[in-house]
Image (cartoon, rainbow, N blue to C red; front, side, top):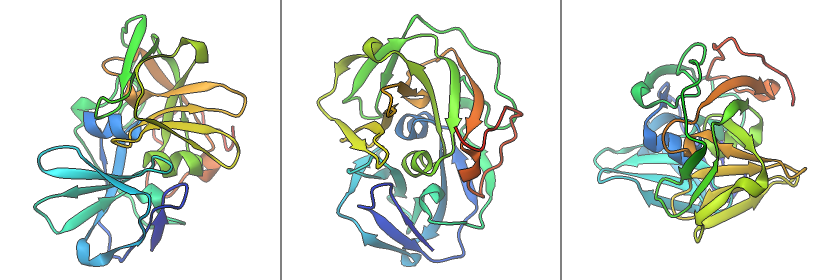
Length: 254
């Protein structure tokens, strides 16, 4: 079974059987992926890198590292120091996985705009300016708050980069104010859309559409967003390992 990042600079192969998918809602995974991160896992002797020119590792804690693509910012791997295994994003797999989500962990750290399972909660209070940052803190910015409607996108591009699905809210481009951006990187997709991510840690930060519309990754916000998940787009491209059980409107395309 093969997988890759969005731009193709990282590709890998895993040999079944694969562990069922675990969805992690911890602050690190949300900050890194832009929403929350889901992973399967295999022993290292059943994992093989096929292309690795874009692969970078970020030391996320004293016990584990996170692997991402420096070309497109895709959130790909989590590797603990003391175990002979590696967790990988099933969203990177090319084609059906045959997997299913078995568990949600660190649910107490989930964002305020969604629920790990079931309908999203009512909107929380949030300040008039939202502070956002990557996992390592090298890229920081503020945008107007509260977030309002948060939109989920299940297209292949969003899945490949986030490791789950994209969940973001729109802001006027002129209202994004950077405090630091020395490590900000961008990837332009084939359709002309641009994704902003941190070159140091791989965190997903924002998405700029072809028309110039700017969408902020909800997981990048530090503290309450004041937003609420409102609908799902491109569900025709949704993959097989997670259900949509929140009762929100679903559109096959945009």
